[in-house]
Structures are given as C-alpha cells and as structure tokens.
Amino acid sequence: MLDADFQHDKQIMLRQHLRDRGITDRRVLEAMARVPRERFVDPELWTEAYADRALSIDCGQTISQPYIVALMTQALDLRGEERVVEIGTGSGYQTAVLAELAREVVSVERHQALSQQAAERLKSLGYQRIKLVVGDGTLGWPADAPYDRIIVAAAAAAPPQRLVEQLADGGILVIPLGQRDRQVLQAIHKVGERVWAEPLSPCRFVPLLGAEGWAEE
Image (cartoon, rainbow, N blue to C red; front, side, top):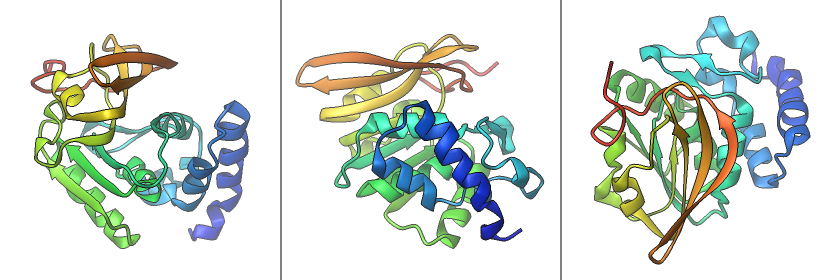
C-alpha cells in the first residue's frame, strides 16, 4: 500500500478520534498529520494503523492508540525548544511525533530489538535530533539530564524518583499511574521544590518494569 492509500483513514483519525475528543493543540494535530503511523506497525496491521486503539508490536508491547498519543503529547505543552526524554521507545511512533515538536529527543527502551527496529524506521523517515538508548527506563537517562519534558509510555504505581529528579525546574512529566491493570494518565508539574499532579484521563498501559517500577512477573 502507498502513503496515499492511508489519507482517508488519517483524516478520520484527526477529525473523529482527536479533534472531536478535545485535542486542540494545533501543533500536535499537524505533527500527527505528518507522521505516517502505518510505517510503525507490521504490514498485516496496516488496515488498522489509524484505528483508535492500541496495536500489538514485538516483545509483548503495544503502540498506543492515537488519542492517547495526542493527549500525552498535548499535555507536554511543547513549544519547539524543549529537550525531551521518552521512556519506552516501542515502535518509535511517539518518538517521531515528539521529534516533530521538540528541539531534542532522547528515547530509552529496555528491549534492544525494539530500539533497533525503531532506529531503522526513524532513519528511513529522515528524523534527526533523536538519541535512542537501551536501558532501564525507570532510571531515566541521567547522562543528558535535566530535561524540560519527560513522557513515560508504561504504567507505574508512583512517579519514579529518578525521573522527577531529572525533570528541570518548570518541567512536565506525563505518566500513567495506578495499578498494573488500570491507571489514570497524569501530568506531573515541577516548579522549584513544589511537585503536583494534574489528572488527565483513565487509561491502560503495559507495566513499567525496572528498578523503580514493577517487578517482572
């Protein structure tokens, strides 16, 4: 299938799944219009690439539904000059959306295979200013800290302390928090010594595994 074959589905995504559900940030909508979501899923899932649901990828992970990607990205309030760290590269789709909107993106993935696949996709699409690393996402990536924004694509019981420490003053951390099987998406704001949470939406993510996350079952 050619990119043009997906334009109808993409327009439905933008109108029904995003705008009609309250995604108002013009830059986020334009970024998601530019990123070819079909390039981040397996060919057998191409017909569902723009459906508003999570899709399976390798290593037991998922690519989040478009609405959740847009909601999380909108909550980051990106203006174009931010340094962002993403926890959970996955397919690389959210990484691409971030690269459209931020100055620099560091993406941490615990699965080497996923990180390599994402690197190949992102390179083929011409994305730059992205650094992909393999490691324990619950520990962030201290080598390049602090970050203006942090986005976590897996669920934790509480915000990992290392991530809060790596968040710059005035920064925002977007993360799903709750139990392993259901969570609430939260925007954590940090100003000086004050840290507070803004609830965004009920959600359901795979668990965040690692030293400051859930133990692997």
